[in-house]
Image (cartoon, rainbow over the protein chains, first blue to last red):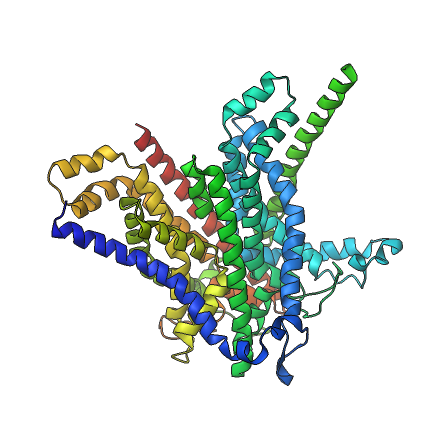
Length: 314
Length: 283
């Protein structure tokens, strides 16, 4: 096996593998280098202050991180139960003939480009949300979550559209995780006289780490989602608890203001937002993959799916 | 006892109902999106949409010829950047599966796959736009390429692992070098699947807007010069959707329809190819 051709083969393929590793490293290094101006000037205050006024040279990114976390958590609250329901339905309840159809349809939901969701969001979802918001009864309006005029464009629309986009992703991973629960486990539960709910909740409990991983991976997706969110959230850098208020996210401010950044400091501040978004998704994704791995190690196929969700039909 | 059983059964039925309802809840937006894209888009998709240039503001009609060609060029550039690196790293991961570098590459691929597309755009802006002070199609293609690499690498790896080990061993036993065994026997056997991976990677990045916003930017005119800013279908849809003009909104819907049809065609094609491969490898 020690032939020079073999060494050449190993080197050649290994080098392109190294290129892949280097790209990831380069993203981190490059973003850090380009954002240095802003990091050095503002330090941690960048993330604590909430005045974003490029004209006056004031950059406080708190509204963006707030909007990103708020919209993603909102999306998660909506998407997590529904995704789990779908995963359970497809893997445990649905008749065999229906399965591939449902898998295909949820995959289609994942395949629709973000910009198409955004377009639909502007012209269909936002007007519908506006009608719902206008119908919120007065007593509820007293709550901070429902204060303010009904614009349609705002946090609620963003959360909804993010939820729609995260559902197929989380549900397909949750489904794979459920697959790795041994059949004997369910059979045992049924043999003891368990109802469907009891048997499945035992399976869900068995798969809990993987399920948490699946939900977190969906969260990671939601954090970085750009086009659809920026088209429906209203792009207003104001921190608010209200679901009705137009707000902003980290990804959205990059999409909107990057090509207009006219000073070095402005550009650097925007790139720092990108850097933090990169670090956040990196941490969330690695953590969730770790959870899924620890769960699905016996099932190699499941791990593959988490990496390349689109191939999951294979 | 009977009361308890009834309660348990009731909870169980409620749970089943909840799961079924979740499926319906997810399919409703899908139906709505497809319905609007098709009904709104079909009104504006005509021959002119594919062959004409965008009309000046205020003038009716026009098409997205420049953006369609632009998208094709950008995705093509991305594929040129991504296919060699992606496939070779995939081969490395599957052939040297146990090594430390292989796990590192796998980790990097999964990480890169999770990096938000807008961040990829910022990165490529830093390395390919800022130094040259010029938005260009090359930068856009590079951004798309960076997004394609992990998809191609991971599918190549997975599919090479599906090829029966006996085939590789047979080639090696006949005296083939490792490279020969891989490139003449293992890769061809997995080729339909690898092509699937490529198609899926193309389908995924063809719908991307965020990484193009400040790399290839946009262009009102027709160009095939890769060192110039270039229009793309997705950025054009974004521009039109955020405009106040009715006619541009119609064009945006038409663009969305073309995008959705393209993605749909790709995923059907990919599905078909993997089916065939699976039936081959299970034989």
